[in-house]
Amino acid sequence: MSNPADPRPLYQQLAARLREQITSGELPPGARIPTENDLIARYHASRNTVRGALTVLRTEGLLTSHQGRGNFVRSDPPMRYFASLTGSRRKRLEADRARDTFAQQIQAQGKTPKQVSTTEVLPASHEIASYLRLTPNDLVCIRRRVMYADDEPLQLGDSYYPHNIVKGSKIMDPADVVEGTDQVLEDLGHTPTRYEDQITWRMPTSDEATKLRMEPGTPVGRLVRTSFDQDDEPIEVYVVILPGNKHVLLYDVDAS
Image (cartoon, rainbow, N blue to C red; front, side, top):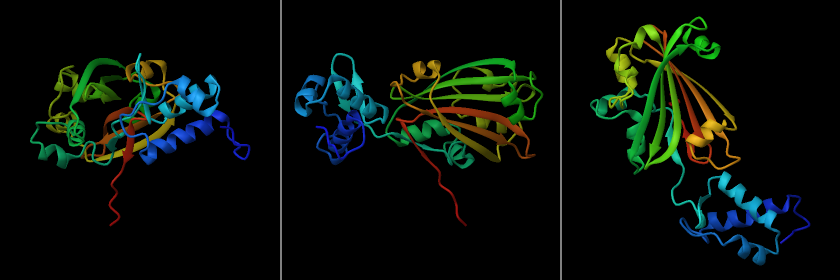
């Protein structure tokens, strides 16, 4: 299998061959990848080379592993995360308070959405306090969510709110807020009117990797969105963790 003209490590060369078979359709969605022993024999490769190649393709989101069954070409494309529509007031009103924008996006892609939420009140960290224009250790209400598509954990979302705004509201009830937290904020007199996004990429923490059932070596996107109300006061900091192999981040930007 080795190509002396190719400077890449052998496992990267094998990953490239298998990737081409996947993208060309030779190995179609749902197809089972040959076993390690079959790949060793077919490409005259070592077991470490084969395992390294498979790890690369799993990290890229091209393969999924099933215990005792082997590796398969991912059947579903990465979920599209419409960042410019998340929190859209127009979308909320169109749903007539029956679905939040996360549920709308997931359902539009043929999946069943689900959120598991917990709530707590804690002193604000320096980072969160700076976004919300608070003093560190001022109380913030936190709503933590694990968000699913067809029972597969898709993203983590933690929302931080000034305690004086949302205390006693539906936001602090762990039950699903069907109409979405932005609608609750509007009902409380704080209509979200604009957002500021900061996006970074890093490796997940062990807790994030466990909750999202992530393959080793897979990076995550960390999107920090600060919401401002009609008085341009910050009312929410939303920190969402997006596994790199499960998402395509999309922005629809008006150029007018």
